Length: 203
Image 1 (cartoon, rainbow, N blue to C red):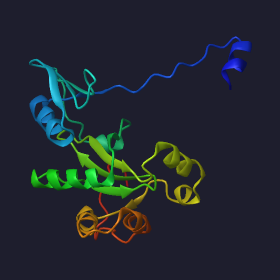
Image 2 (cartoon, helix red, strand yellow):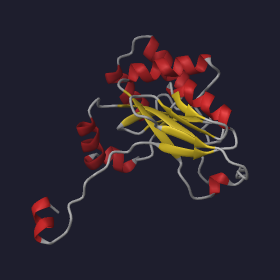
Image 3 (cartoon, rainbow, N blue to C red):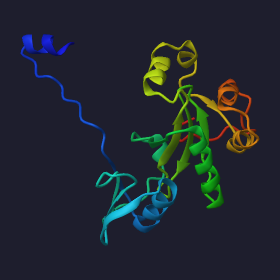
Image 4 (cartoon, rainbow, N blue to C red):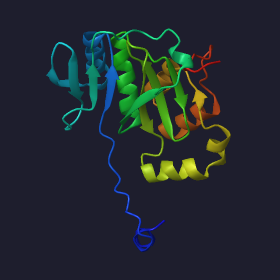
């Protein structure tokens, strides 16, 4: 519905807010803050005994943490409703690969990796078991990747994505294979891992 039609129908125009932050409840405040600082380059803007507000850009906060008495782990978290993951995007595939190499050096490895057609994505698991997706856009342009999502029969047939082994993809990247040929090969299954990983959903 267009704005003029909304006005004629006495309906208020929708003003679209921009997504700002995510807040996580945790009984592991210090461990979680350290993890997000390492993985996404977060910096702490405020912290006290039970809370922390962090950001990795100019915003006052992007990831916040609340730690209060009474919080406990959910042993059946995978089978319960809730957010599956948050996501952060790099400007390029080369940046994603460089971050993979850096985090591997810190002993932090992806839980699973998928080429979604519109993005190449690596999913890490934080100390609370929340997934954090690090991704790069396969088209380098949101308009183009949105068009792919809306119109591609390939995406319609496989919207979740193709699993890939990050070490093998990183090695191909380091050997100089251009993204223009590497990404279609990943999507086609040329780098599927030996064991399909758990993606945090009921089997």
